[in-house]
Image (tube, rainbow, N blue to C red; front, top):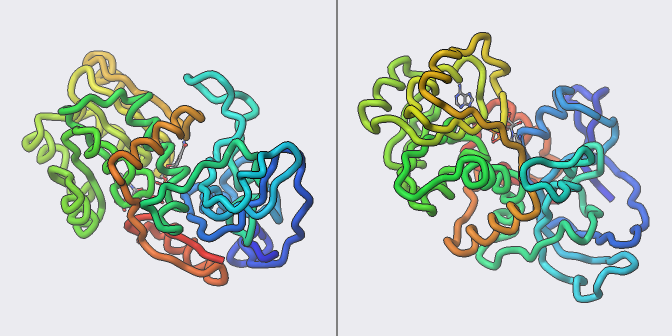
Length: 332
Ligand SMILES: NC(=O)c1ccc[n+]([C@@H]2O[C@H](COP(=O)([O-])OP(=O)(O)OC[C@H]3O[C@@H](n4cnc5c(N)ncnc54)[C@H](OP(=O)(O)O)[C@@H]3O)[C@@H](O)[C@H]2O)c1
């Protein structure tokens, strides 16, 4: 079958190539991929900046498709089901933190950027009926991360002021959409006024351009500060967040796109009783709750663009350059 693999020797670091497909083990299913989606993780892998990189691995964590084959012990009702895949493997039983054998589909295990993918049958969920294949593929990893960040970690309460930074990001858009559905006053930041405009159309109360040095003052004036901030940029701009979080507020972060902050204003954190909370993807319970929220509020992922597998390099470059507004989808 054809797939997109990690190929560090290629100038683009990825290859659209023929790969062998293997026989199913007991408990596994084969999903014929109708659509797959990129996450920033795929770009980190391409850049060689992710642990456990294995040359030749099929990339991609997000996918939706149809079950075409089942392994021994899997209920035959699974055959022909339209499904999405939970890419978080082996979370374990502890809702607080993943187990040491936690793994994400698409590195080092073969992922979704292929004509088909093999996964354990317990990673399979019915595709939400209101979503197209492209929208369904866009949901799993980013939706799960956003849901856990807001709910389990952020404990968002209706009527609170929520700031989601970098609205152009895949996870950020879900965080904003989920926050709006849950009745929070949602504010966004972005480097792009066009992306802010899209956020306002979706129901955000206001947006701030973080390229403007005065954005924190403007945000404080307009909102009085935030109860919860969801961030994945980190870097030195993390200190700006300490200026706009309310005393007693929480900053939940799941990434460090800008790297580590070179300094952190410790006094501001302890004096104002600010909670800094790390989060990563989510448990099986978080995934089920996220799906329920998406179905209850008929939430639809924002799709930036759809590429065919043979244009994967273009799709990856778009993510690398941060040009996207929404999820970048790839189809076989
Ligand atoms: N721990 C986890 O489970 C987990 C899960 C998913 C993602 N992540 C990590 O989280 C990060 C985002 O992932 P993603 O897939 O959502 O990425 P993405 O779709 O590529 O989005 C990246 C976004 O970051 C924003 N950004 C850049 N500089 C910023 C700044 N100074 N302040 C605020 N925002 C800034 C940009 O937003 P604008 O275009 O609006 O300016 C950009 O669109 C990545 O580092 C990724 O590896 C971690």
